[in-house]
Structure formats: structure tokens, C-alpha cells
Picture 1 (spheres, rainbow, N blue to C red):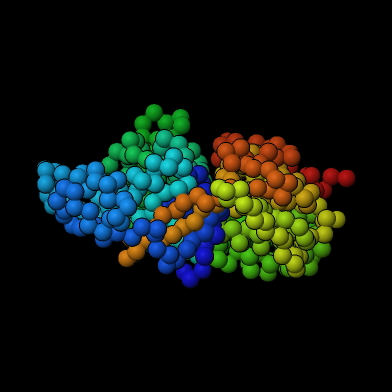
Picture 2 (picture 1 turned 180 degrees about the vertical axis):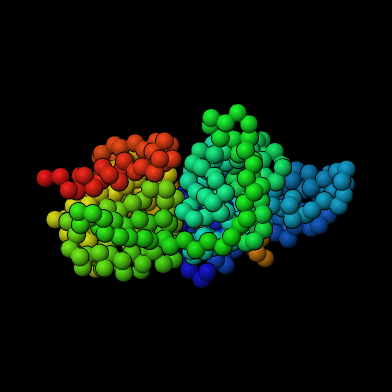
Length: 412
């Protein structure tokens, strides 16, 4: 990808799309292909204690313990030879974790490929949304007609083993990676399900799943409905095309469904919001030194007339790019937010590829604010109209949030 990825992602922390990567959950950030890390060192395969190799001169003293540990591993660890690539990846991962920021992380080469490919709209995996923010990897919703749905996975299912391997002590993100695999291969998930005394095993055949980021239709009572599942490469163009078709039918109301949308490209979020907001600020980025950069609405939006009432649907898995759009629509009075409090992802990350295709680092470089200057990090957006949706509703095929939105738009 040859452009700066300004990604407004949940960064694999909340909703994760279990398709190509069994992961996605996007957050706010930028991907910077080809940019070298600040320090590029040539780490020797094996080094004597104190030998600094390619370590910059001003950091040689600081890095003496690192190279000592490296040497001890190579000289004394029981199972030789050790995998130097894994050692390198582990060192970077530990360094990123030391920042104490869940959104600043190391991305393995495969994880980086999976994360970027998700935004391109096709995936090879089991097809489910998951939550990696808890103790166990948790299914939030199988995708319609996906291998996950066909196998019988349900919202709330927790993964406790993958192909017979107990994963209860592993980080959910690590478990997510273990579910990865090429199309046509099988994976067996052991599931802990509420109301079941014993684990349940599901053998699932991974498949290539094409996921449109925008779907739309006309509902009864002449209400236009648009759902955005992620803010990817084609989302802005797809939305514009589908909105044009909907607006040609002169709807009496408009629903934008951002539930379970973990985010995507920041620029896409701005373009999406601009379809509904004619002018003014959409989002402001505030860097560590206090510098603020505000992005304004683009011209040419198709549904900017406030005489067309609008509702945005959001839930606890609406994050980052979704929250930028919902926050802008809420602050400007263009739409009311209905549903549940959103996730609360209010930071922007750079995704910076490392040399020799060794993955990437994802690092927080700014906070973002709504047009009214609100920060939603760790707080989320509070709905104007609170409507819960329970697991029983999902199992019964009910959607009280959508029903409430339609009622709001059709009531006198």
C-alpha cells in the first residue's frame, strides 16, 4: 500500500473481525510504508558480552544489559539453536508493551499483513466479530452465512482451546492469531458458553469471505438504512454511490448503523461524515506537544440537509472511526445517537513498517477530539436515546435498537 494509512482503529483491542486475520478492530492512525524506524541496528546473530554491534554510539552503555541477555540466551539456554527472529520480535513487543498503551504495539509480519488486508474487503478465516479486551477471546457476533455461523458459534462464546491447545492463560490477541489460517483448512475451537456445564467443540473450515463495507436498503415507512461495517479502501465511494440511490427515493428519514464497527482509515471517516455534514470541523487531532490539527468537512455530501431526520446506531463495539463519525454528527446536531455507549477509542496511531518485511510498530501519536472539543477516550459517546440490546434479543433475531430508530423517525 503506497499511501499513509491514517487509521482510526481499535487496534485489535475491542471488536475484531475474524476473517482473513480473525482480527481487525480498527482504530485511528496512519500507516507509513517505507519509513525507517528511528534507530536501525544490525543485530549480530551472536555477540560477546559488551559487543554493541550496530547499536548507536550514544546508546551503547544503555544497551549493554540487552546484549548480555542476548548472549546468555545463546550460550546457556537448554534448547539450541534459538530462533533469532522470535527473539527480535519478542524484544520489540516487550518494548512496545512497556509504554503501557494498549494501542501502541508490535505487529508481526503476518499480523501486519492481516490488519492491512482487512481494510481491503476480503478475508480468509472463520467469519466472526470478536472482543480481545477481556480475559478470553470472545465472539461478539458471527457474520451472516460465515463458517462461524454455519458451525453454530454464538455471541458470547469464549474460546478456551484451539486445536486442542489450552489457551485460557494466553492473551486474547495471541489466541486470535492462532485461529488464523488459509482458506480450506480446518480449525477446532473449544468454546465456553453460558448455560453449558461442559465445553463445546466446533470444527470450522476457514474460507475466503468478501465483506462489503457498506450495505443499504429502504425500510418500511420510506426510511433509508445504511450500515457501515468498516472504514476501508472503498467505503467512501461505496457510500456515495449507495446514498445517491437512496436519496433518489426521497426518504423521510435516514438511519446510519455503526454498530460493531471497530474503525478503519481516518480519512475515510472524514469522508463518510462529510456525506451528512456540509461544512465545519469533523475531528481535531491533538499531539503530545498540544498542537491541534482540525479536519474540515468536504464539499459534495448527499445527505447534509437537516430537514431529513437522521439516527446513528451505536453500541459498545462501535469504536474509533465510528466514534469520530458519530461524535461529529452528534455535536453538529445532524443526527441523534441511539443505542448504547460506544467503546471509547480516542487516540490516533501511526503504523510504521519495519525493515526487511519484519512487521510494523503501531504507536499512538495523538488524541482526537469531537467538533465540540470532547475527548471520548475510555469514556465513549453517550447516546441521546439509550436502547439496550440483550443476548436474548440477538438469539431471538430481534433488533430493538433498529425498531426504536424507525419509531423515532416516523413518530409525529
